[in-house]
Each structure stands twice: as C-alpha cells, then as structure tokens.
Amino acid sequence: MKLPETQVAVVEAASATEVRTVESLADELDRKPAAVTRAAFELEDEGLLDVIESTDESVSLTDEGRTYLEDGLPEIRLYEAALEAADGDPVEMGQVIGASGLEGGAVDIALSNLARKGYGEIDSGEISPDPDADPDADEEVTALEAIESGDADLVAEDTLDQLERRGLIERSARTVRSVQLTDEGVTALMEGIEVAEAVDRLTSELLTSGEWRDVEFSEYNVAADAPDIDGGKHHPLRSMAERVKDVLVGMGFEEMQGPHADAEFWINDCLFMPQDHPARTHWDQFALDAPPMGALPDGVRERVEGAHREGVGEDGQGYHSPWGEEMARQIDLRGHTTSLSARYLSGIAEGDLEPPQRYFSIEKAYRNDEIDATHLLEFFQIEGWVMAEDLSVRDLMGTFTEFYEQFGITDLQFKPTYNPYTEPSFELFGEHPVTGEVVEIGNSGIFRPEMLEPLGVDCDVMAWGLALERLMMLVTGAEDIRDVHGTLVDLDYLRTEEVRY
Image (cartoon, rainbow, N blue to C red; front, side):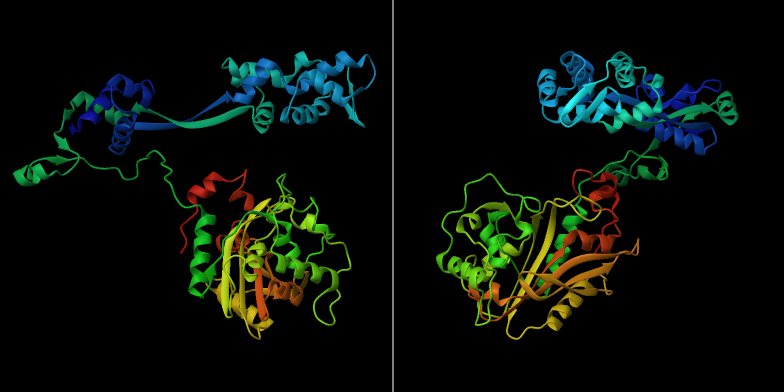
C-alpha cells in the first residue's frame, strides 16, 4: 500500500491499544497539528484509523476574579467593616463603605451580595451585619482558590455559574481529537506501507516540463474540519443603514448632518415643545455638563419664543407657560434627529430653502428609556421631511408605502397619535415575521404652523422619524435588538447573519 508521507508517519506513530491525541502525534512527528489532523481524517476515510473527538473544558479567573482573590470579595470587605463598626447596632451605610475602602462599582457589588449571602441586612441607609456569618466558609472564595490552583473540577456547577455571572471566571471549551489504529490499519502495517510520491498543487514547472503526467496528486478532503476564521464584515445595522440611504437617495432625497450634542432650543423649543413638558426632564433626556450655547439666531429665537407664549396666527393660543432663553441654550444629547430638520428648515444649516425639497438623515439619537427587546439608550433614527405646497396625509402614507415596499414590507398599519409639533400625526406599525407581534416602527405627521412659521417656512412640510433598528428586526427576523448592538451584543449573530440585498 502506498500513502502520502504524512499519512505514513501518522499511521506508524498511532497505536492499536492506546488512544493518542493529535497534539501528541504532532509533537512527536514535528509537524503542524493541522497537517496531522488532515492526515488522520484521510486515514479514517481509508478505514485505517478511528478519529475520536472529545470536548476539553477549562476554567480560568478573569482580572477581576484575581483582584478579588487577592483583596477579598467586596461583600466580605463590607461585612467585616460593618462588623467592626457595629458593636451590635446598625451602622450608617456611608460610614461602612468608607471604612471598607470600596470605590465605584465595587460598592454596588458589595451591597447587592451582602444580603444575598446572609452577611447582614440593609434598611433605611443602615447596615446590620450578622455576627454569626462565617466569611471563611464562603463557597465563592473557596471556588476562586480552587480554580487558581487548577482544581476547577472540584467546584460545584452552580457556584461556577454564579462566578461566571459575576464576571469573575471565564469558561472555554475546545475539541480534542485523538486517533487509534483499526484492525485494517494493523493489517496494513504488517503487510507494509510505502511512501507515495505525491504533490499537493499544480505548478508552472510541472506544466512546462510535462512531469504533471507522471506525478500523483494528493486528494483533498473537503469535508474535513478547518479552523474557524472570523473575517471582517459590515455590521448588519450598518448594512441596513446603507440600504435605507440608497432607497431614499433613489427617491430624490438629500442627506442632512448635524451635532449630536445641541442646544435645547433646536432639540425641543423649535419643535413647539413647552419648556415644562415632562419629556424635557432628566428622566427622558441626557443633559450635559457643558457651557450653554452662545447667542441663538435672533430672528428665529424671537419667533420661537412668541409661538410658545402667544401662539401663531389670529387663533393662536401658545402655551401660556414659562419660556426662558437660559433653558433653551442648555446643551443636551439630542433625543431625536428632528433637531436637524429644525436647523435645515430655518436656513441655519444650508441657507434658505425654496420648495420643493426632500431631506433625510440616518443618525444616532439618545433617550433615557428602559432597556428591553426594542429599546436602547441610543438608537438610529431615520429622519425625513418633504417641503412642498398642498401636502396631505395621503402624500405621507404614499411615501411610506413606496419606502417600505423596497424592504418587502407591505402590511403597514397607521394609528392616529399626538405630537406637539405635528398635526395631524400618526404612528406606523409592522408585523414581526417571526413572533407575529405588531411592532411600532415610526412616528410621523404634518409639521404644525407653530413650528414652521417661526422657522420662516410658509408652505407644508410632512415629516417622520423611523427606527432603523425596528426596520432591521422586521427585515431580518431579529427578536431582541440587544443581540444586534449595545453592551450585550450577540457576536455569533453578527458573525453568522446572512448578507441581504
């Protein structure tokens, strides 16, 4: 029997009575593990070897885990400080924290784990340590010590799970391949195996010399395992943004750009949102510790103030609520990209615009929302508006129909709503292709005179703010936006998400 050189070496080094790992064979033969693995699979196809796969799991401490192993778990340090200061009575929390030497996030970790482990109770800002608690018997400390010494297999599974949730350990698994001679392999060795002269590629020298007619080419096992290589690719959300941009440009729109941090004047006041509106508190938007914006454009500022105080037109009412330039100049992270629309419509960004005009942006906005499957603290908004004479809701709905059809979404639903800056207004909904849930995907309407007149616009403007992430969920079937981007992003999803056109 003739075999390629590497296969001969592997079959001669393998044993019929002992299972040997590919790594040990590679070390012995002074060959790359990948070459030995490939030869092993080829020999398995010939029936000369059995390839046995197993999973080797390992556990190691993170940097935070090593720090806690050296300095002590935060909850134990807090407990010991409280016990020393308590003398049988509850102790003020700030005093205990100061005595423990804990800072930053370690304080929250200590407080959350103190009661969980039964080291004490926290009530009304005071800590009552349990004098009978025994930190020396803490299972997590014992587990950290065992893992550091290489005895992770002695640690209970639930303790490992808890340490992993706390980010104190890392678990990894790898596939270990071993080989063993089959009866056919033993027979072949007894009968004798010779090295076959083989080449693994067709070169120009072989072609010009004609030697290619006489050589034996190595066979390739295209089904053999190969190492995973995660090459670079566009983020699915970025790809979706580019698709949206292509669609809107194809519909005749131009792109807007502008500051992420802006004066409340452009974010809220120009949108006819009263200064005492609940959405303008820190509960909904992010105020920045930054110097206020300088002088606001006089003509626009005066007209915006007038709209807030007296309204617009003969029947205008305004809000009859406080309005101050000091608040209008404060700097916030924009809660929506409609601030860009206000800048462009006022002529501040691009100069005076004459109808008809179409503009859009796909940029980030920031809101103090509760994080869930469809909300993040920062998200991408598809802002757009059309300036023209005699626009109606029918024009707006037709624009959405044309836009969403480009993404295969034809089941749009519209629901009337209220916005301070549009009238009439309505929300858009689409059905999620996997869950069947009806998901809100945007908000829209016709800008009110109280917004347009102060900006110097004397014709109709229809506008919208659509959620890029929600659109991607409807197109790709993603069920949780936290899997796509943010601190909990699912890397496997990003690596395997199919390319869409």
